Length: 115
Image (cartoon, rainbow, N blue to C red; front, side, top):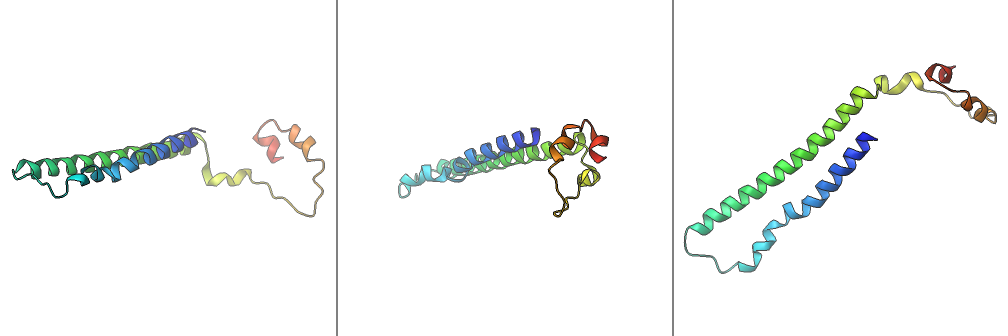
């Protein structure tokens, strides 16, 4: 549940900020032919591009580390060694499983499940 929640938060946040981080240049398209003659225009544009790229990089880095941290947390605390191979149950398609609800009702722990 924690991994799913973190993935939803990181995914939504990434999608929500992606449009702004990718299309920010379109806010400056209306003055294409009216470039200023002084040198502060070039310095301002360079600083703006640098800041937007730094913001995009840091945002994507944040969401990457959130996702990775959720998976590390899950792997550490959920005890999923060998991909849960010790808890697999084989199902035979030629067997009558009508008594299964009564058997499942008796399961109280991992040992009774394996039995």
